[in-house]
Structures are given as C-alpha cells and as structure tokens.
Length: 53
Image (cartoon, rainbow, N blue to C red; front, side):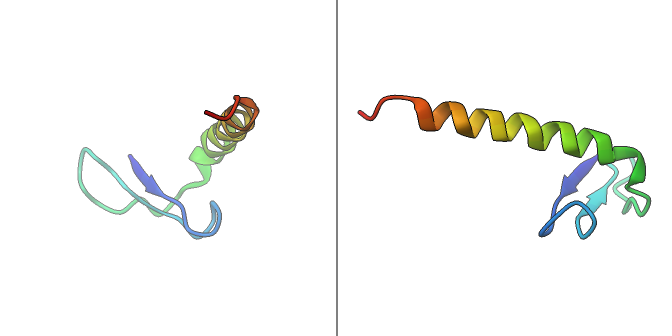
C-alpha cells in the first residue's frame, strides 16, 4: 500500500500497490502510522543533537 498523509492520518489517501485501487478503510493501518511517526520523531531529535559542521 502507498499512503500519503494529509495534515494528519484521517485525511490521507492510500492506494493498493497490488490492484492500484484506492483503499478507503485505513483503520487497520492506524497503528503502523503512529509507530512510524514515533520513529520519525526520534530520528528528528537525534539529528538535532548532532554537532554542527
């Protein structure tokens, strides 16, 4: 699945990579979205802690 978020999870759009059709029920993927957003936040914080070059 290819997911493109809008301002948040609820207003994003998704397309199945197998059928190339729109995925309307995104609720099964909410936990994946939350997990990835958490990892991205941790990554951003790590990068901000790196020394300036």
